[in-house]
Image (tube, rainbow, N blue to C red; front, side, top):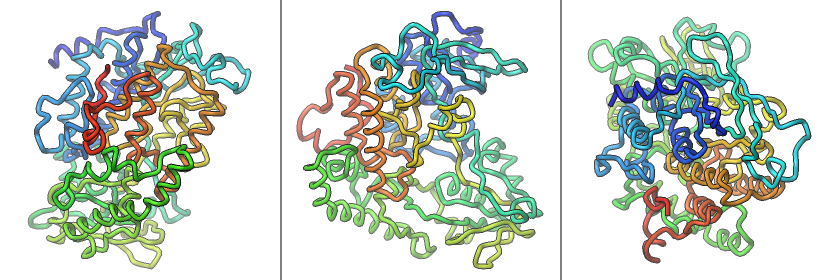
Length: 529
């Protein structure tokens, strides 16, 4: 298979004249877009020599998917071992994606080592129009709208290609690290040890990571999935004689989950069925439904408390001061929930992982990390697991005035159906909306996008799309304090219903009303009609 893939990668040397659509990024979203938009002979510009995106270039040796296999697969391409109860490793995910590309012949669309560095708008300077794309919202009108500048590996020149439509699949994670900002004299420059962002750690081999951390005092800044995995790897590297504990500097607590079972009940019962999601607010809902949501507030709180009680019993959250003050549902509704790796709290019980709360700010000192309360954490090595600035990747290549429109006042990308920016014509954004299964979210959006480009439906006016986007942001704001992450977890079925309705497809995908109410929805329910 490797030889076939290598041959496929070298077959496309130039952009064919028939290509009307450019896809930027060869991760999960880019592959889904290539498959769904194959009728337009798309070109996928991938900056690296391989597909997989974040799963290839932004993972640790221990990184695993946080979703069971059957919930993270394309609707038309199943895992060969989908009954395996373990969460897939990042290597398994890459193998799965390569199999997907083989099965649907996607390699011929991909240009590897092709980094998009500039995008120019060719649509004229007439300003914003009432209808998206200017004429009835039709995206393909037979004339180029964007010019894409591509720098190929080993070349100093930038080659420009013209397209009618561009699909941005550059991803939210990786490439651009989010770095804390410090006052002068309080940043990494005063620290005599080593500072490394988790993105740079991902580039090291297993031997290099062990050598880096072994016998050193390590501080990991952060308490999300990447920070938790990194702390565990640090503790594992420091087992035995001469090893030192790893300290996690925790600013904002989030709920962590050991498995997809709560008091013996499958997790999907609480949030992934139609009946469960009926309890939660949906964007742009009517007055009657808003009144029902108000009446059901105690029931929503009860579900959250039920889950919290299990987590507090199952995990030593109170022992280590790691029990969040906010309800569990707020983390779930903002896609902040993290699945714990095996052995995490075992390492804490062995004093190989320690926790230090930083309710205020912090900065660097000569010997380590200094908290606002005067506490100093001595360190030889500080890891910044502080996330990524994925939106900056989009801003860096878009021209004005579109660059300034990427993020709205809510802090999110204002995307209609999680795909179309009402004020950026002939461009789509896939992979910037989160859910329990980002793969499913991206695949369905790509299918919806194919319907749009194929003329199966028309977009509303720009004003109506803006109103819809604002309503979605407002619904999230009322659901969780972390609403700046565009997450659809509590209304994912409703979100999918709307796209199916646009496409003229069945909205109710189950076989009977019992299944519609009580069975979880997954990718297999959305196999194409």
